[in-house]
Image (cartoon, rainbow, N blue to C red; front, side, top):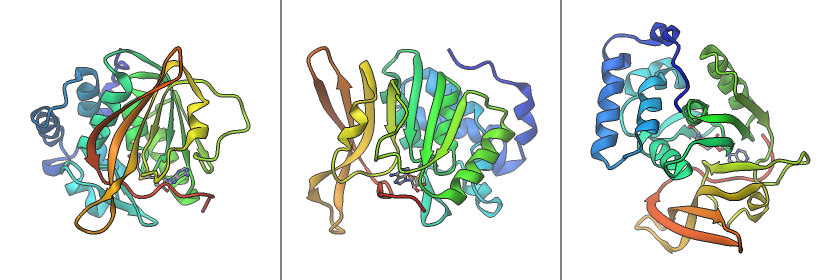
Length: 233
Ligand code: SAH
């Protein structure tokens, strides 16, 4: 169920390119691009994406493109956020979710509208601080952000229904599979053996689902993410 939206979010709506109408146009485009999950579309229609980017870029926030958020990182393009959310939900309500790569916090906010609880981890301290501020401005209370290397595993026990890795992995971060509940799914961009025209490996969205006997892997669209990196900064 989508979190009951607080009318309070209307105060973030600007005019023109930061208005609710521009956001609705983004959602209409996502539908044309094949996103079908109405719960995800409703959440993306609610979250003011423009507050997650620098003020000078706010007018471009609803374009279907990644945008810089500082420290060489990017906010994922709307289609990617929608597609990963749709693959994580798989048409069913989500309980607890772990996100690796908070970045701007936008994907986190979208998830927070339909998951019971979102744990998100970011390796760059200055991005953690900014994301925390934005999520606090929205008054989202079911989110916990931490600073750390999310691909290295955690010292605390953790069991979640879904994991979203929002940075491109060159090898499968197997340690994360251990945090999935039975039937839980991890959605991530993973490099395949082929390289694109630019010589960079092609990344594809993968879903790895924990089954009663092991793991099942499915491959989806080609995507482009900044790399999943070790350690903290
Ligand atoms: N979900 C974000 C996408 C940000 S880009 C958004 O919607 O804005 C990916 C982010 O992953 C970057 O901020 C990068 O610093 C972070 N990242 C890369 N490797 C990581 C790791 N091992 N642990 C945690 N965060 C990582």
